[in-house]
Image 1 (cartoon, rainbow, N blue to C red):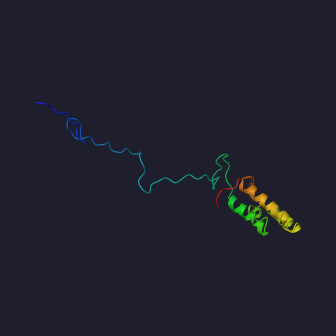
Image 2 (image 1 turned 90 degrees about the vertical axis):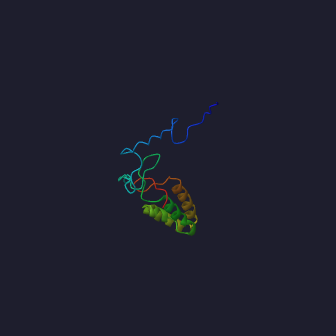
Image 3 (image 1 turned 180 degrees about the vertical axis):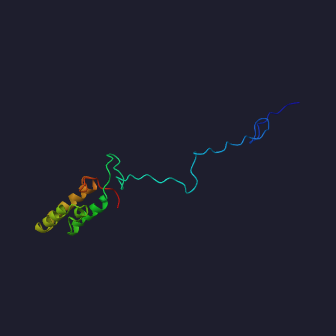
Amino acid sequence: MLSVMTEPQFGGNEYGSQPTPPPPPQPGYGPPPVGQYPQAYQDPSAPFGRHPLTGEPFSDKSKTIAGLLQLLGLFGLVGIGRMYLGQVGLGVAQLLVGLVTCGIGALVWGIVDAVLIFTDKVRDPEGRPLRDGT
């Protein structure tokens, strides 16, 4: 008589016994129960986050809003972006240059200033980098 070898059935071992149950979960491992996640850490000295390369805290002013307000110079309202950043003297100077040069100087200065704002070359009055987004 020939004997035929077969593979063991799934769920048991080669002798036909039942598989051993998995060990019970240990406390402190795995995800916490629903609704019990810890609060995210927020640095009180940097409420808007930190610059990823320098670690400096971000300003409360948005680079996007400041740059777009500065581009209003294309419509004759130059200096609004600088006023938003708290640099009122520079904003008024841009308005005066716009009046004296019939808008040509303000147009050029507004575009250049908007490019500087969008490329992180301008900081707020406290010297902090402007944050991204709105």
